[in-house]
Length: 499
Image (tube, rainbow, N blue to C red):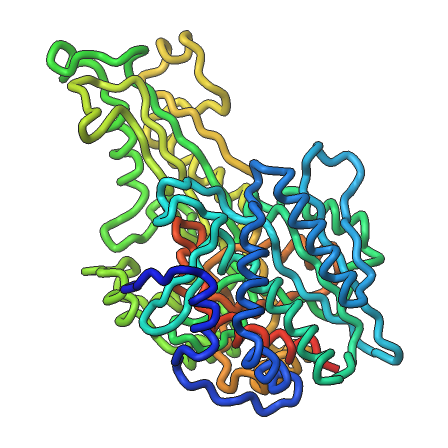
């Protein structure tokens, strides 16, 4: 995205209050209209508070930083009159991030609404960031609009800050809450939510509700608000294949010693055809079909493929011509990374001893992560490999012509909420009052631990994201378009105001 650095920060904070942006109609409903008026006169102040929040490091490898975030959020909720606490569970490993929980009960309320977000962020490599400091937020002007660049700007501190600001806006406008409101903010989502269900199960008396509103992810590429009724699951596998016990001179031993890099790319290439269809037997088997309402939603949603191809400089796409919206409802197999030997100026004329690849498999409803992992293992075996779940011994390497060490992590299954759920209509109407037109989607491409939430809370989930689609989620130079924040405050106000 074309951009211009803006320094110093205070100057941009002042500028952001008057900088031109695409005209957005003022919301019609009282709660989001109050949020609109509240942010319109406080943008520099609110932007600085968001920058302060982003400045607290929050990666999984830094438990102290995560604890600092959690304590900060408990304080923020307490200041707003919520009964706030940190939730954990017996037997968790030391340093497991707590869940931040806050609740306010409304006299006479007949409904309890739970809003979920997460305060942890992806790992960072400082050298990949333009300013070299992922937790020193930088404000930039992009296409005439203010953006903030920092880890977790879009994923997912924006949602938390929008929720807190929405509370302030409703209070300032003297709009009383109509439902019981609960916040559940996780600290381990980017690490796979390994302990979320255990923590929630230990506090089932606290975390129940009529619906969980999951505020994570981006809005539609058209910048219109979307409401999403499910998420794909996810599981990962690592494959290591072996050649000689040490690197060998490629001239002396080429054509004789097997090259594990070549073996691995041949193995991986056989997993997909030229259109991206997975060729592993039974890979798509069990996928639950979409119902009539879900198909209708897909047909009504904008098709952004042409725009995205231009944005991403793609000369072709996978899927045999099917649009992205349709492909999001199929399982995927992706190579996250592959390594063997050296490249570039470090390259040597040698045969490497091993090659490694990490696979990411997105799942859809009806396909269990353990089953999908086994299908990949069975395929590798069918290609003549001896598969081991532990690093092979010298005896195994000598006894077998081809050896693959395969290791999988604990996966997360997909989940999908019926689009005709009665409370879904109320959620959609509330958001329309804030954002106007709403795009309905049966499934998001990303993964959120919806099934863990639904089992623990005995309820259903609906996702309402607010970040911009081009926020560099999970990558260097993560960002948030500040107009998405102001829109998000209005959306959160509408949801919190639901009766």
